[in-house]
Amino acid sequence: MFPIERIILVSLSGIIIVSTLLLREGGLLFYIITTIFPSIVILILLILPDLDNLKWNVTYVSFETAEVPLDELGVKRFYEKKGPRNFGREDPRR
Image 1 (cartoon, rainbow, N blue to C red):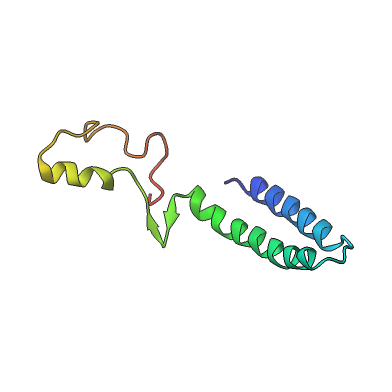
Image 2 (image 1 turned 60 degrees about the vertical axis):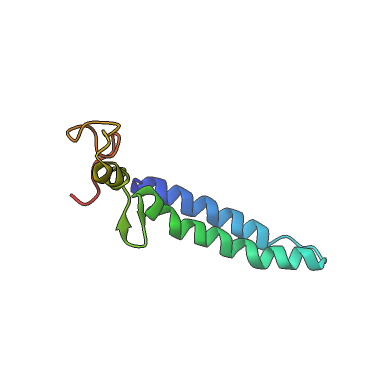
């Protein structure tokens, strides 16, 4: 993601969290929602950059690893080895 996209996401999420916390209701369900909702938004904001980089548990995800079983079985790949590795995305390890 570009830095401006991150700034926009954080600012919009902040507006949503603040407006949710400033509501005045008296029900028990409302207190539960206002407690859990900001945590969910923050977790989404923390996970989003990793999903954008196709990174999960500090390992990079690519479609090349899905072709290894086909190579071991001797079956022809869906695409040639010189074809696109990440289907249009650059390899994030470079």
